[in-house]
Length: 285
Ligand SMILES: NC(=O)c1ccc[n+]([C@@H]2O[C@H](COP(=O)([O-])OP(=O)(O)OC[C@H]3O[C@@H](n4cnc5c(N)ncnc54)[C@H](O)[C@@H]3O)[C@@H](O)[C@H]2O)c1
Image 1 (cartoon, rainbow, N blue to C red):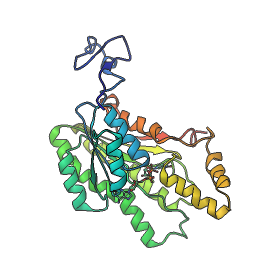
Image 2 (tube, protein in one colour):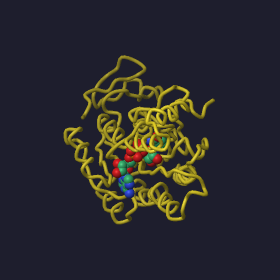
Image 3 (cartoon, rainbow, N blue to C red):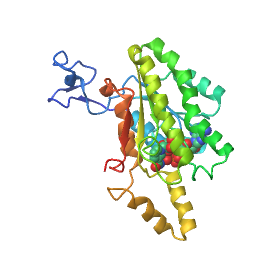
Image 4 (spheres, protein in one colour):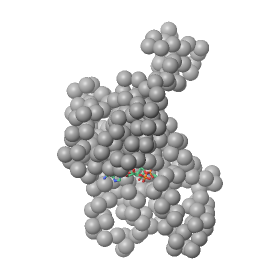
């Protein structure tokens, strides 16, 4: 998965392991676009077996990172390992389990932590039970507290790190129908992100979150199927999801993964404490 060359976006310079001749003149001379944008970075990804987490693990491995891909679904993780020709290390990590988080963070020693695990609850405030709210709070929010608490001390000792949290366009950016629990937890991820970012900005730690619109993933297909069963037509359900998209389509996981790579890399060294909206114009109208 290791790419062969560095290529400067500002001139014809290319090389491997060399310093750009104009690097002392300005920042842009240090920006490279192919192959090794994450060379020497150790990355831990949660919920990496499918969807955005999987696409991001593969994209970061292609950019030269040492990737530790984790999930509770070990069968699917095995397929990820095969797809990366063994370049990606896999491990069963349940983000709801303190001990599991601690031991895997210790092993991975991540410079980049991508907190991707999350669950979509369907319904309004009157539909949600306390148990459902507790479950989503734990999986969507507390899990990030766990992984950050485990990874941050090591990042501080090593002098830096990039933490990327998965939020959503739904929550702090826009409200969506029947997404009470989901929107509430994802909005809280924004607060967590800003808080970590401001507390550690002088110590080399960056913390950002991503707010995608609708993304084609296995769980999204399940949601379309479930709505289809209610409406009596899968096609009608698909039409409902797609019709709220200004571009007339949902995102591919790889489109979100490209943003993850950017936030993981030193190209985004001046960026912290922000929500990065990537929603095909859904909230931009
Ligand atoms: N798909 C979308 O439209 C969309 C939009 C915005 C944000 N998101 C967010 O992106 C993230 C990924 O969603 P997706 O749709 O790409 O993937 P997905 O929902 O299809 O897959 C989720 C993965 O999480 C894993 N998982 C579940 N519980 C876990 C646990 N306790 N510990 C570790 N892993 C666990 C599952 O095994 C699965 O591999 C979620 O946080 C989701 O809320 C998704």
